[in-house]
Amino acid sequence: MEKRIQHSIFYSHTPAEVWEYLTKPELIAQWLMPNDFEPIVGYDFEFTTRPMPAFDFDGHIYCKVLEVVPFKKLSYSWKGGPGGGKITMDSIVTFTLAEKDNGTELLLDHSGFRILENADIFSAMNTGWLQNIQKIATLLNTVTNGSTSI
Amino acid sequence: MDQQAFDAFQAIADPSRREILRLLSKERLPINSLVENFDMSRPAISKHVKILEGAGFIYIEDVGRERYCSLKKDGFSALQNWINYFDGFWNEKLKTLGTLLNNKNK
Image (cartoon, rainbow over all chains, first blue to last red; front, side, top):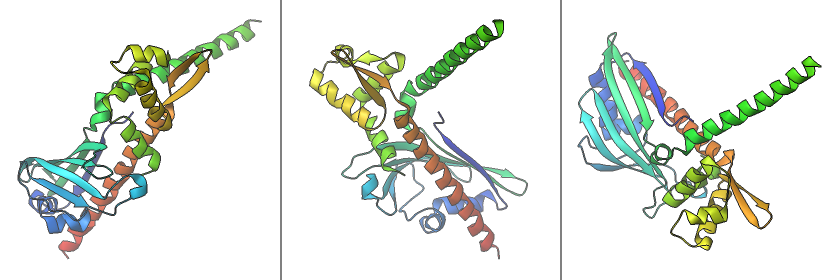
């Protein structure tokens, strides 16, 4: 089970230029979502988008700035839910910038889906299925071997 | 994002329900055995089990007088779908950013 999202993309612009688009609210809004971001560690901000009541999502993504390393790294929490302070999605978004070939390699990591990582269930589930598949495979082999030996 | 994915997230937002899933990840258990692992009444556990069943995490089977619970793939798949949604979301947004950067220089 995949627990994190990672994307790596190359921009033929300097890290300083890319950084502007990650940290200036009016520029962030142009490619991501309307927001009241400020590049200050501990700062609480929100992204706002279309609410989807049918999906228990109030259209707000509640964030807190976790790390700011100018032109290199930016990280914030990413939480959301049906409203009334109820959080059902709790994750972390991290942007890492590296200068490369006269441009910037941007790495996006969306992870720390708390509920997923705390639960060993997922690996257990995967192992469980694998064991079941192996059991079936063994059974099939037994049958096949049985029939060939006849 | 679909309804089931959000239900799935809400279902496992509760620590007791995560614990139930953890116990069931080892073996199929009757509700009565689950109750023994918690400082909660049987009705309280039954309620959690019902929520997990509703979100597609577990499957309930009546065997004699016992109600056996085992893990079901659907709830987990819903979570995976939801992560896939954000995967696509970021892919699209980062491309938009590239277009913006390119237009800036023109």
